[in-house]
Image (cartoon, rainbow, N blue to C red; front, top):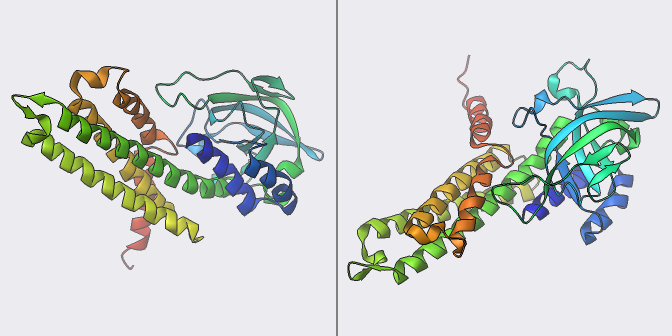
Length: 311
């Protein structure tokens, strides 16, 4: 699902914000999987603070020359197109209007091609099924037509990317739901198989109450995720709903998976049991597509704007 999330964010960005030429050329190939997409905002020195990016694109005739370093690219090696946010116009009246999204097309694989270097895979705690990479841009030359939406869309990159991130946050919420549903299923099955003091451990109130809490959290996270997804599908802005769903589902996912791990006892620590992998996958949901603290910031700002006192 992580492979699909990043790929779909890029396809969504092209569909919503791309030029007709970009849509006609890229979307059919992305639909078949011939071209895979990657999405790049983070850098080694910044993650949640998008305005702090330092990678720059400088105009040179009809082209831009890009220099900088990007981090945490899902699909970074296999991707043929990378939606990349960079600084362009330092003279803009807002820090959020001096960023531009480029559709950087590259050869899939590791190594250096045309000023783009994908050094290798980053070794991670979990999420082993998809490669995560950094990307080094050293004098990479790209035409102005590679700007998402065309040259006239220069400076709109931050707002385009945030639209895509809303899709990503709903997806992360869905992934968190998937992990915690499976963790709950494993826990309730194990609780009926494992016996202590002459009873299955599910008969002990301490375990039974854990299962009740877990099931309630699974249901709540799932309902919020579906609600946010439906709003996004309708074409409405859903930054608050996506933030709430991502925040709640990811926190509940971590709690439910931890409880399942504890119910499994010593077996939860063994790689022979599936819960060990889920226990390593869950933490990524807390930070992927923005940390819980970032979600709270988005939610609280919107609430204070909506409920602002008169005068």
